[in-house]
Image 1 (cartoon, one colour):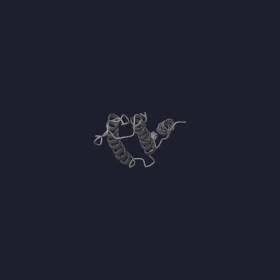
Image 2 (cartoon, helix red, strand yellow):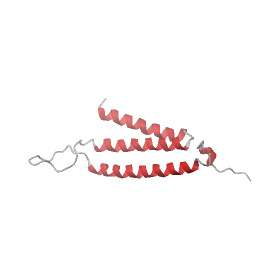
Image 3 (cartoon, one colour):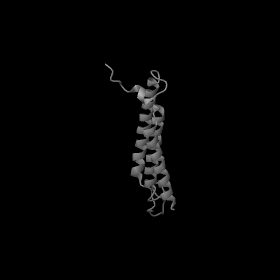
Length: 119
């Protein structure tokens, strides 16, 4: 099996593990953790896709060196930097909200925060 295919498989497994944790866990902190695992897998997938064309940084070549065709694509790298910053800020906001919710119910069970329809 090619190394790239193996990495793609491992990244897919990490994304599926995060998605399964998001669906199966009832604790809100574990849901945020699963969401972070899933987001990290997506970032890793984009980095892997950007490195398919080459591993060298697209920086000015040395004098006398011809332009090589094995440069990594810089556009996904810029998108990934933005995704990392947005993911970190969302995770920080969710952890602050969960901290405030823990004052109401320290178990952080998702069912305990759902409204009940009792007259």
